[in-house]
Image (cartoon, rainbow over all chains, first blue to last red; front, side):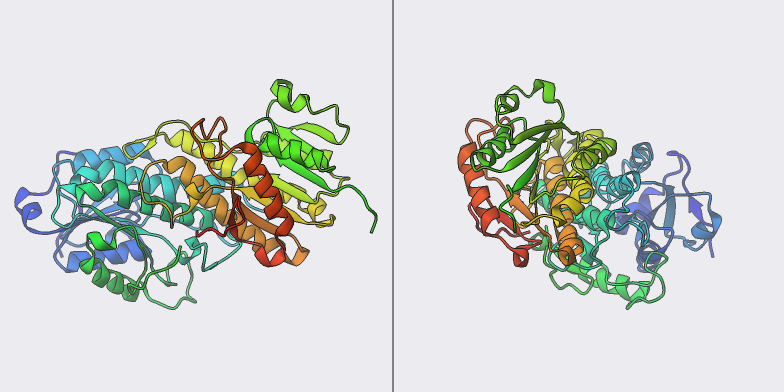
Length: 249
Length: 233
């Protein structure tokens, strides 16, 4: 296995020959769960993978991303300076697919009468502001690519109709807000030929959901990748289950 | 049952739809607890204060301490109807490529967390009333289904998230007999809506009062327009 490539400064960009031939994907929250699985699968499929991780110095998480096609970037989407610095690093790089996957769950305590204001706001900052800031910062790179796709990883909990996981105010409101943002981005970025969708990945066994889940990350991500391959302007602004079914708002 | 006066709490009562609702409920003989950030500047509200059924409370729904104080001030009252009307738009920088993130946080704190805070602070008093209603003043701008044009991200997302608060509160308060709604007041000629809007504040408030009269617990967790028609999420 080749040594892990980790960019720490803008002067170590990948070679032009590689970026001109293969599609590329930028994934936030790539050190574990679905994000890591997306990175692994796209890298195996020959894509150039830019993996945004919150802690570039946490070796265990990074080492699991070890693959010649994967380039890790220090990226906490709640920190605008970090977004800007990755944008600078990748200024000349077309991004075929931006996957806004970074997210977190506060745990089972954030229920009626027990929601902490600051932690609730943190959910907004990561799920909503982080996604918007990534799209604002990388819109040119996505528009300059061949595929022009933005995928936001939402949740069934963000559906006002399904009422999944009801009672979790911070998580549910931030994912509903993310879905609204997806619909707005679809309209705003249509003229640039960019397709924007949000996905519910299913109930996947990750650090966030625990072991009692229905799907492995491999199954969920494989299914989403198959759907992502088929996406075009006619799907923009939709909310999709990992298997491609439409989810009600 | 005694024929005690019905009571309503209205937040953001110093102007616009809030002020009109206060005025109409007073005319209807209700006990009205009106709330606003700066009572000393609320001259139109003060002009209604000769009516002994009106009380005025200082309240900033974005401030947890302020909401807690309101809960204490009203702890001995029953509240038939809580109208979470206070809301802000969030300024001009809401377009793609020019988003004011600090303003976004501020708007979510007021428009989304505010109604949650006031509802939890007053839920016991609402439960101890006859009507047991909580009405969140949302907007069709928060409807994802109807969002076709882009832009206005700050305001729109705060109302979408408020609708999700409505759905969650409806679920959590159902066993206590409390009905929770999101309502769209219409595009109303107010400071926020501007002078070219569709309907007047009295038309909106009259429609909302009719809707509020007509709903029951089976409608809890739903989204209605001021004219009583259901709205999509």
